[in-house]
Image (tube, rainbow, N blue to C red; front, side, top):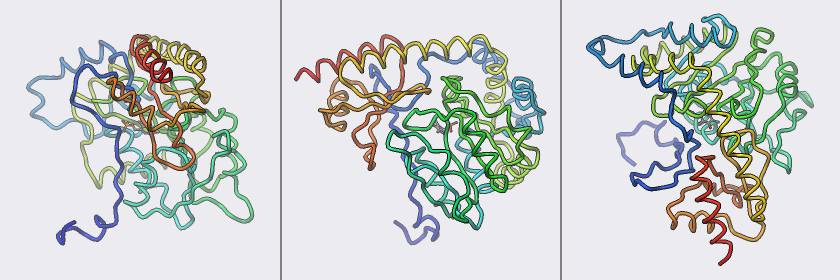
Length: 357
Ligand SMILES: *Cc1c(COP(=O)(O)O)cnc(C)c1O
């Protein structure tokens, strides 16, 4: 607290990211990073861009990256917005597109940055409870009893549950709310879902946000993007150009373009994570865990006889870090990132030992 703080700062409740411990030798399964590194071509491109031209500002419009993403997704470059991580893209969307007189709707259990941005930008909001099986009920997101959302946001697959809403249901929500922006945060879609990006030409109210942090294994580079109608993108550009002209540096731009252009590596590394996930789900189920169906690079699991916080603490004593949320309805779950096969074996063995005590 300080008397020098503005009134806004006094009222903020900042997001708390999963810890990034400085210790080596940890099995780090707490922040959904990809276990295999980025495309070697992305690393080469970053090395090649590390030269004297760093004295110059980067391209403020990120034209090369927008062109590469547009090619990959069959869109025009003007339908793409890029930012310093998808968190920044989301932040701009909250200000540019999600703040209206009527409340923004999002699930009660979801990415915990959403309420933080509501606090920062003064966005009125209303949470909609997930069903008992932690699925999102389409009907709850359609206008009802004369009530309409000012806008809607949800991740698909949802975080931290990993549950996927089928694309046809996403489309029902978008089509059923023609007067509200529907933002689908597809941070994890490459691990098992169908993206809504092909729908952006059909629906002027749909914005789809992706990140390079998870499926492209570039969390350290900070790159995310949105795809949507020209008018939505223009709104985002207006906010971005009122905030920071150069959110992506030259190294980030070079690495991101090369990553997008290496489709084979991308597909292959996602496939490996999916295969490991399925093995892990089988092994944890055999240990008595209830595991929610996951379409992401993490699983959400609880053990009917063991307290989740105690399990997380016992794993930590064995240098394995997973995420536990002290939040109503999910405080008996652990969110476990899918690591390498070796990391997952270490985890399963540790849980076996812990459960035997
Ligand atoms: C990880 C994550 C993000 C943020 O990703 P960055 O691009 O690293 O900022 C956004 N939304 C969800 C649901 C996430 O899990």
